[in-house]
Length: 360
Image (cartoon, rainbow, N blue to C red; front, side):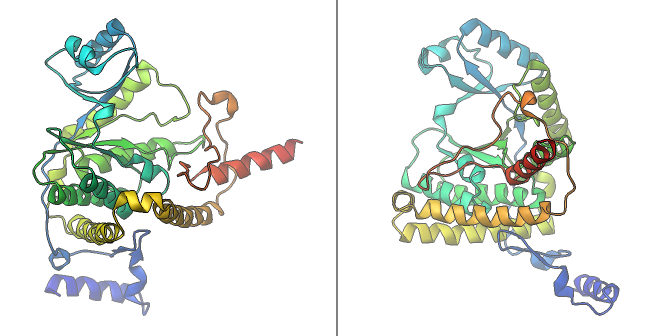
């Protein structure tokens, strides 16, 4: 331990007034210890990322003229990358013929892997990385670019570490292809609370995606149960552009805490990837339902911890049914299917029931 680290630890132990220094170490849901402070000795294997994140606007293509008009609007807002979902009445080839050639496009059917379902179902960050990389290994990609979609939540430091570890492991396992990470904010941590919680959650997730090194970031409406309109989309895009104007992944290269946490997550994902390979690969653990079982175990653990934190919260006003454009609660799934569920749902349902009982 270097002199500075020793001095910090001695100072902390003095301030603790006899309590154990180890009590300050927090073990995350990923079983990765988060230390009170980090020094150069915590960096085992640095990994530099120099990605500059850009905003990506999703568009559903059902009408040629409307699509071209919308693209022109976003061009005026300095947007040059679009994620396109095509109506079945069109083919990708015919759409490509009339799209403006000076912009960049990615079609939703061209993702090499989409790990968002794992995150939304409650998979740990290590699982998200390992399952995604296992899928690439099992199904070699033939396109020019490895397009990977990832979901980002509100656990700021760990989400940054996840993206950096993901890029590192993917680059090692598929070294011949350029990698493109497209990030979206997950709804798993969003709530129906009438507060600024969702706005803060989305903002943190945006920041994590940018500092974690996502190539492109999709805008997210904090009022996830409402239809988007042009004004909300424009505001969300502007928020991302404001963040990317002053931040990028390069800023965290060499930062002790980030390098340490990213490497720990990378190592754990690599170990899990080896275990998946020994079990016959991702297809094998999917067919025997062990993948679903493992994710559900992590999800239940996360939900239990979240419920404990909610237990001390006072009654809070919720957005009611008249405010919804979409049904915000998960629908019951069979035991053989991943359930995409928000963490706040049990708390919200309890509040709704208590409100119903009071007014019955």
